[in-house]
Amino acid sequence: MAEETDLSRTEPASPRRLQQARSAGDVPRSAELTAWGVLLSALGMLAWLAPRLFNALQALTEAAFTYAAQPFSPDFLQTAWAALWAVMPVLAVIFAAALVAPILLSGWVFAPQLTQADLARTYPFKPLVRLFSIDSVFDGSLMLLKLALTAAAVGWALASGWPGLQSLTRSEMSVALDVTAAWVGRGVLVLAAALTLAAAVDAGWRWWRYLRRHAMTWQEVLAEARESEVNPEVRARLQGRQQRSGQRVDEVIG
View 1: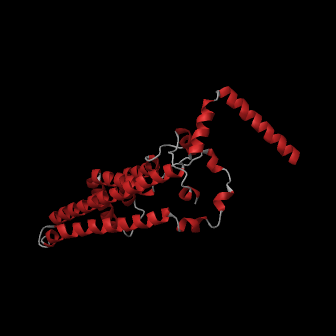
View 2: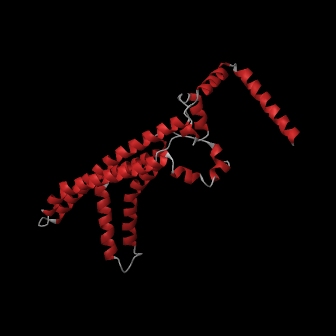
View 3: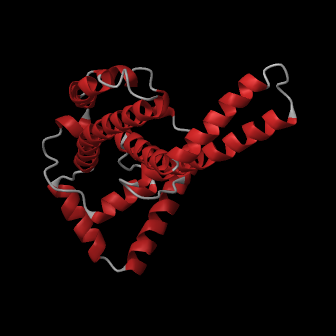
């Protein structure tokens, strides 16, 4: 691919080049950062509303067994509605995080050009080219890193908490539930912390690839500098003359 084989692109992208790319909707996106933001938001809401959710789900379970023969009874519907309202804040935060998390890396972008048809997107061999690209190698390495981090987090949780759980076989149910919930919470927090590293690595890679993709040659830097020195009115006049010349050529060809 051009951005990977052209060694002459040694100059960093200028603010103008990045602004043009941004206007076209070309910004870095990190799926791992988005997933991490959604996961962190969901865990925060679950930790905050844990007692309320537990009570609502317990009441719903009891009502389901009590009114099994009458699933549309007013008491059961009222309990189900209360459980839904208890879960609704968690769902709302997850939805908001799914909208906000993608713009953490590059901010809000409005690009109407993306709605226009682009035949280059239908190139049949594009997925095959990407399969043998450096991005594919990175994605595979990142997946292996996530598996290793997940295995390490689960292994630590089992090694640190399993002996204590075995000693709760003769304890009261409430005590056993509290200790088990604390153990699961620690394991989830460790897993989220491990995935933080994967999200940071992916976000850094996506940003670096974005800047590398829009790197400029020395000739492009000089051309942009000369164009920026021209008076804006003169530059607009030249652009209009070029457009009229292009229209005349099209009319002659047509």
